[in-house]
Length: 473
Ligand code: SAM
Ligand code: SF4
Image (cartoon, rainbow, N blue to C red; front, side, top):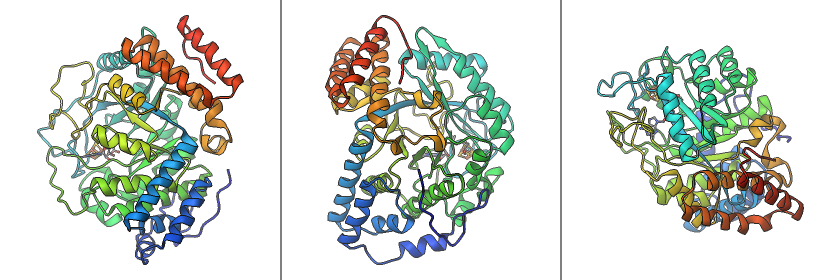
């Protein structure tokens, strides 16, 4: 894929900061967008072009209800056209909540003495993963505080340990991580352990706001965090996820900055982020933030639709921080990955710790559904739940592969793999009611495939029913 060069006030150079707040505000402070401008930008996105910063500003500055409606319709159409109805499922697993930083929005901040601190032992990690496998999970994201204990060697060891756990037909086929920024050497170490995506959120891209929220520890260094994914790329780790924590600063600025970050990675490494996340601040122990930048649901759904149009080929993740009804709605506008059956307390999957206890988790989640309940609801909405991990395992990552850029890729690979991994779930884990709905969904989706691929999928489903596992295209 070739990216159009764009010129910015700060030129893109590897390992160099690239955010210029004035440039972003200058674009945002332009007059309200006209209908014609909005239509032109939506049309470019539907033509599968990643939007420029100027074009994203046009969508953000489209505030008339009719224009917002058009943006959401555009996002819906793009999602349907590009991604089809697949939704990839995963689970977060908190490995350790010790932390030497003082992020004023986070329950793990160092000064929070009421937080119960814990690092899972090898045995506890295994127990957690066994429960996750018994639920049917295949993809995890391991999460860590920032602490000297959680160095690259430790992270790599926990990733390897996660891959080793096999219970019944269960196994974890992709381990992503969300951890503090590493050095190039550190990134090499975690890459060698076989991580999928390395995910890190800038929290807020606004340098002054960032300074106010991060009071102590290594995370006070804005630029070190901003350039973390450059170092990941330098280390050969080309599968990376970005994000901003919405509620810390103006959401319009953060959306622009996420796109700027994407452009930077494309300009320097010819590959954009694999995923974008947009967590919204939730209640946490010792949280006293004020309402100034609170993002209401109406703006939240709008920003998700704008992001979908802005970066058409990037996966979009929405976690159980948000309630089920809102997650269901946002799936329509472009979210492509969600977690299910989530527990964020340390040891929360296998233990009997109370849930929703501010002293045992980083923040409160608002979607308590089990993985099976999430799957049931996806099926009811005519979505196709997927546990696919094929691309990562076949080396289809980074610039060699952007599913979006390969014509017919989704129909040839993603949809069949969604069906095969769903079939495994139905055989191994689903209650009979869910299984019936799942098989019906697989049948309903067969016409999406050409006859040859459909035939191959049917054959492989038979093999799964006979006991074969891990079949993919
Ligand atoms: N300690 C690592 C770091 O800071 O990069 C790992 C990240 S933390 C365990 C995962 C993410 O949770 C943070 O990057 C932040 O965006 C998000 N987070 C922190 N406090 C939150 C809150 N109160 N509500 C919602 N999300 C929050
Ligand atoms: Fe620590 Fe990360 Fe929480 Fe900051 S966001 S206090 S670095 S766990």
